Length: 253
Length: 253
Image (cartoon, rainbow over all chains, first blue to last red; front, side, top):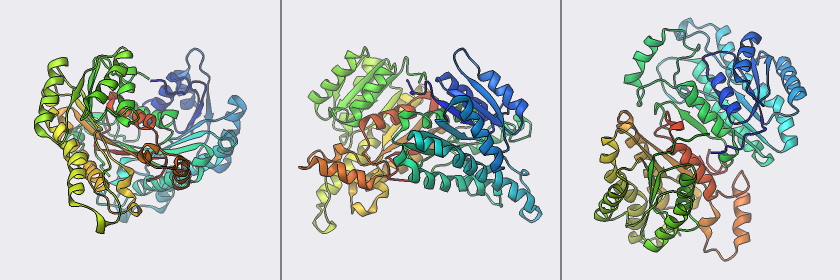
């Protein structure tokens, strides 16, 4: 299927991890004809991804920015625009959990702030920075990477879940606001994957899935990339403000 | 993007209408490389028209008459398709229609029964008939058609919307039960479409109304639904099951 992505420019945040969703999204976008700007807080990793994405005829660049810092985000977008002239697609993929699975009574406020700053404010800063250009061109696609846990009720308090859930509301509000200017905003909510996000042994993670995930396997970077790229393309132009759960059936809203 | 339809056989119900979603889906399945797309409709002449269009694209096709509310006809239809192609990999339950409306005080029970029969039982009967074949080959993809009207209560009391809401639940139930047998079940929920108002005397008034009511500013087209349906019918969405994807220009968030 021709997704109509040839010649489009995409910026993917948090795509430095070599086993992450972000890199798979970059690779799939490039395969479909996009030029890709790869962002990460770690420039060396961003470069690794940009190198992996390089293919004949495709332009890539690596750009360092901490998405929780507005000035760095604005600078990043300036650099990408200087290099590519436009940003058609923004994938708000940068995210994390600080720390993993702590008891509510032991949680530190500092970690609450880290979760909110990275998982929701980061997406807001990046969207704020790229939207003026998209509005000027009357064209844009923003895909926020949320999480399937945002819709599930686990016992316990998780600012990770809360901040990923905030992305749902952000997606809907922003989508309604900019759709008439030719900009689609949607979200992908991945299930658990074998990425750097979860530092445990992959075999240990896998053993946990079969009883808990209807399909019985982990969500792969390619699963997420396929959905994100579908939502970043013109074939999904009538899809506005939706959250697509890519989690083996874990969430049935 | 290769959607992996080579070698696959699809059955699309309610694909007789020459302006409907079913025909658009059938054409796209053919274009994207399906080996065969069987066309079913209560009107055999219409089904044949669609089958001819599919064949002209170089894809095998047969037209089969069936009233999806009649169990015997449904069983016969599935037998015919299996006899012709040996398998059914993909089922698209498109057969459906709006028959009633108006204030509750004036609604007829007979129409309630017909709307629920066609829009809910029809989808269940066809899925029931095909399931043994899909389970046998440990592979199958079912895409149901829902409706944005399930969330638009200002449209009034509607057994069409209620039946489509039940299809959403059927989608999630069947997806959960069959998750580990290699069968995925999802639903595409269209928003208001100009084809819903085909009998309206003032076409421009319909276009203007849709522009006011829908965030996108225009109605959902058969192409929009076909794109979403084949994304969910393809193995690239292999980690997605039990989902209702609203394709409605932001009417439903």
